[in-house]
Length: 84
Image 1 (spheres, rainbow, N blue to C red):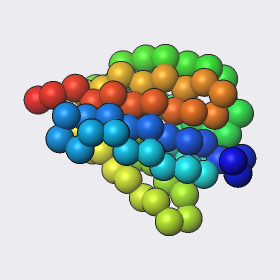
Image 2 (image 1 turned 90 degrees about the vertical axis):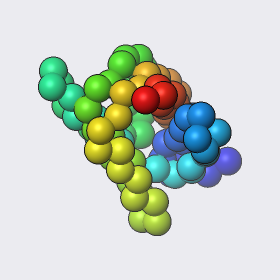
Image 3 (image 1 turned 30 degrees about the vertical axis):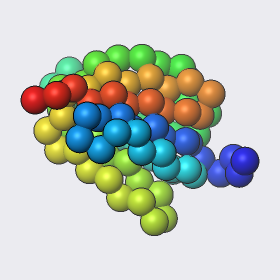
Image 4 (image 1 turned 135 degrees about the vertical axis):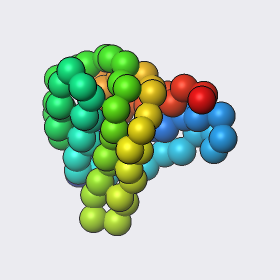
């Protein structure tokens, strides 16, 4: 496996599981905090009611209004989007 970035796993009921490799940044913006997650970021778990941007050279995902749970550990970021 190439370790140039973060592996991102996104799960929702509409699209199922999507996996992206070598992500450079994940930006989480909520009313209470802003996070910029990059490679080797500390382990973290939380709930978001706000927006998330996931980017590298070829991937540019944006979830402007999302309610979800997230976890980052060992350069793997998991995002589970709530229904509705």
